[in-house]
Image (tube, rainbow, N blue to C red; front, top):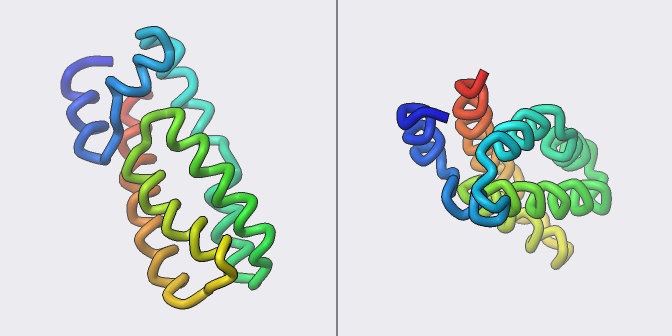
Length: 118
C-alpha cells in the first residue's frame, strides 16, 4: 500500500495504523481483509431493514457492521454506525433516516478509498 493510497484511506477516516497493529503489521493481510469487506452484506442489510422497518434485523446488521468496521480501523464508519446501533438498541427511530444518510456518505467514502487498492 503506497503513501498516496494510505493518505486517501486516512482522509476517509481509516485508522490504518491501529488496524495494522491488531494484525501484527501484516499489510498484505490487511489489504486482503479490506478486499473482503467490499463483499460484506451488513451495510446493505442495515439499509434495507430500516427501509422495511425491520428494526431487529437492522440492529443485528448495524451491530455486526460496527464490529467489522472497528476491527478494520474504519473508524469514521464505526462512529457513524454507533449512532444507529444505540438508537436501535433503545428502540428509538427518531432521526434514523438522517443517521442512515450520514452512514451512507461515510460508507461510500470508505468504499472509494478501498477501491484504490485495486
